[in-house]
Structures are given as structure tokens and as C-alpha cells.
Image 1 (cartoon, helix red, strand yellow):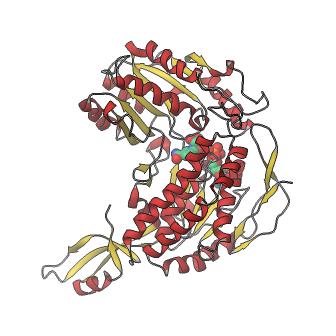
Image 2 (cartoon, helix red, strand yellow):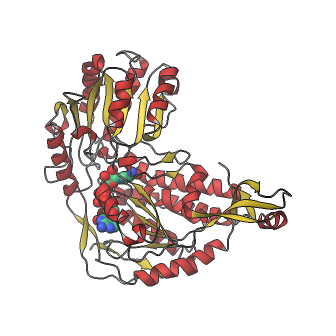
Image 3 (cartoon, rainbow, N blue to C red):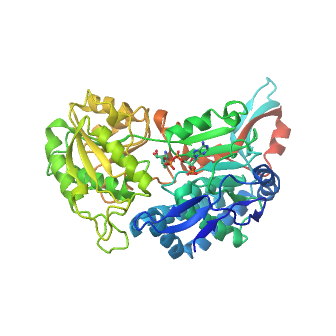
Length: 522
Ligand code: NAP
């Protein structure tokens, strides 16, 4: 008996309908849950969120909404075991990898609850000081930020059914904006369960949180001009979304988090045997294999001084060889499965493409799987070496969303930065070196094309948060191919869910306006 993932719209759970999509265990192939097809009642459900949901949320202060986030986090913490079980079955991930999604989501929720508590009783925000607009100084301008009048629609990717929801919902709900989430179908179960738990507990007012599972049909048609849309997924779907009437004509504010050919760079001071070299190797192997490489931030390209290419290849291959791949229920499994057979096929196709310009340094598919067979979506890690750094093209344009990375030799720092930029905009670049000037120079060179630059010296080797980990204090998103989006970054995230208006008027009126506001600073 599988669970039907029904929609919650208009403050009601819709009855189970005809099963259209089946969610499966990517290791055993067992059917786990089903969803219906195109959702009914989207227009009414969205209208309910914009009215009842928004009014109830916006009647509260930031501090009161922050308290609701805390309650939701505590409730879900008490149900972590359920979520880990769903993640194991539906995403095929090890416990550690499930933790990145489940606990990462709850951590982010708790982080925003703390930030929101500090905003206290305010119900809107002032941005900057008032500007004097007249000689007598009586006429002034004050930028005011109020919660967006519409709803926030999230269309999410399959790889983070928990974190992908809460990293967006936390700043939206804190801002007072109702949320409708459409999880990727293949892993929608975890998102559905979390939403159900929070709704059933009555933590949020009716209309504040809704969910649509199974089909994206009609979602964008149901948007109106004051809504905001946050999308995470492939560049192809992003292009479809950008060209939709709601975005192209009605100016629905949109944030896109898409594909990314992230880089990890070894500084030329970090010779084999140095601590910086060891950190690079250890972190690269880990970042390739965490969540079987299904992280948008995984380093798809590893740039190393040409002279160290061979040594890096051997060292990383050695680390990858030690990771057993297979059923995450087996105690010795270090890396679980891809999320589906479709994803498996996509990784194989991508690998074949990259092999046209790269040699295989390590092929994890040669190792036997633990407690899984060829019908599963398990795939071993692969390390490639690009034959000609300057002539290669596919490695800079095709994202293989799995445990695959390509080593690329560079001549000097300028060459490395040039290669990094051939990804045409990425989420993250990391640099490993014991030379702080080298790290700073790389940061300047990479910041214009990377949303996050992660610098690692031996001094922070143990405490750094990891190339691939998205921390809520730092912004997430990158220019160009990465979608041009920006999420998180502490209170910066609230800007997307607020409307800014320049209020011009008498100084005394602006003083009155500031009652019930707090300064927006981060
Ligand atoms: P996807 O196929 O683009 O799907 C993403 C979401 O869009 C799913 O919820 C999907 O629903 C929905 N969707 C599909 N077609 C749609 C349409 N015409 N209109 C509206 N929604 C539509 O991406 P994915 O395979 O789930 O995710 C993998 C990709 O996401 C990778 O390329 C990865 O790099 C990227 N990603 C980026 C980030 C980031 O932060 N930059 C984070 C995670 C993942 P269905 O599932 O029902 O089709």
C-alpha cells in the first residue's frame, strides 16, 4: 500500500485522486508513494493564500512569525527519524547524506527564527536613513520595505526535498509572505510529510503554507503580478519559466537557481605533501561523493597546477577507491544511490560526452556494489582528466549531476581564473592554499563570476564549512548559467519577499511612518 501525496490548497487537504506518478526506492525499485496529475483548484487555492494566509501572517510581527518558525523546527526535530526513513527509501542516501538535507533544512529554519526574533515587534522595515529633498529640510524621502502582497511559489529540485523547502520558506514566512511549494515529483514524499506535519500541528495560520505535488501544469498560469516565484532546477526548465507570461509580462519577481559548473582550485604553492594539498584532495573526494554528487554546488571541475596533475589524480583516486558504493542500508556503504534510474541514465550520457575530451583516471563502476545490483540507480564515482585545458568545451558547459569531476591542469593563476570563467557563471569556487595573498587574489578574480568564493588554508582546515555546503549566513546563487539568483545571506534573503517603496513627504509624517518599523540592516 503506497501513500498518495495529496495537495493542500485553500486550507484543505484534497482527497486522493487517480495515481499518475509513482515514487520509487532507487535501490530496490519498490513503489513508495504516488501523486496525481494536474492540480485542481489552483486559482482558488492561490487566492486563499494571498488573502487569508497573507492577512494572518502580516497581522503578526517579525518576532511572532519567528516564534512560529521555532515551533515548526522543534516539531520537525521530534520527527527526524521519520524523515530520515523517507530520505533513505526515496532518495537512496546514506544517513550522513540524509542529514545534509533533513538537518540542513531544520538548521536553516532555526537560523531564521533567531534572526527574526531580533527584529522584534516590527511589522515592516526601513531601508537606510531618510534623505533630505528640500532646502528647508522638511520634505524627505524614506525607503520602506513591506511584505510582498502576493504569495511565494517555490518550484523545487529533486535533490533537496527538505532543505530546498525550508531555505526558501523560512525567509518567506518570516517576511509574512504565504508559501506554495511544488516539490520535484521524484522525491516529493519528504516535502509532503514535513508540510503535513506542520499543517496538522496548526503552527501556521490557514493559507500560510500550501503544497502541490505531481504536476507543474497550471502553476505559473495561476500567478498574479504581486506574487514572487523561486525556482530551483535545470537551466532548461528555468528558460521555460522565464518565458512564461507571468514573468515576461506580469513582472512576477523570479529567482532562479540552476545548473552550475563549480570549480575547486589548488593553489600553486600547495605541492604534494603540504597540508593545503592534503586538504584539497580530501575535500574534493568528499564533495564529489556527498549525496552521490547530486548537489548543485559539487565541484564539477578541479583546477590544479599542471605540474601536480598526476599527484592529485593519484591521491583523489585513492580516496575514491576507499568509498564503498551501494545500498545505504548496508553499514559499510559510504555512498548511496542516485535518485532514480532516469538520473542514472543522464549521468551515463553525460560521462560519455565528457570522455570525448577527457581520460578516465578513476572509474568507480568497476567496483562491486554493496547489497545492490545493476537494476539500482547506484553509480560509482568517476574522476576524469581533461586532455587539453584550452581546447575543451563540454567540461565547461555540461553538468553531469552525479559523482563525477574533471581535473584540469592550469599554467598560472590568470589561466586558472580564465578556465573557471568558462563555466559562464557558477555557484561556488573554492581555493586551497597556505598563501593568504594568493587566496585573496583569487577571490578578487572569481567573485564576479561566482556567487560564493570559499577560501581554505591549513589554518581553517578543520573548521571551514565545506565547499559544497550552503550556510544560511552566506548568499547562495550565482550569475549567468547558475541562474542569476540570490538566496539566503542572513537578512539579505528578506529583500526578495518585501516590496521597497520610496515614501516622500513631510519629515514629521516620515517620523510617524517609522513607528512599528525596524531598520533593515545586515
Ligand atoms: P528540473 O527537471 O528542472 O525540475 C525542477 C522542478 O521544476 C521540478 O519541481 C519539476 O517538476 C518542475 N518543472 C518541470 N517542468 C516544469 C515546467 N514546465 N514548469 C514549471 N515547473 C516545471 O530539475 P531537477 O532534475 O529536479 O533538478 C536537477 C537540476 O537542478 C540540476 O541541474 C541542478 O544543478 C539544479 N539544482 C540547482 C540548485 C541551485 O541552487 N542552483 C540546487 C539544486 C539543484 P517535476 O519534478 O514534477 O517534473
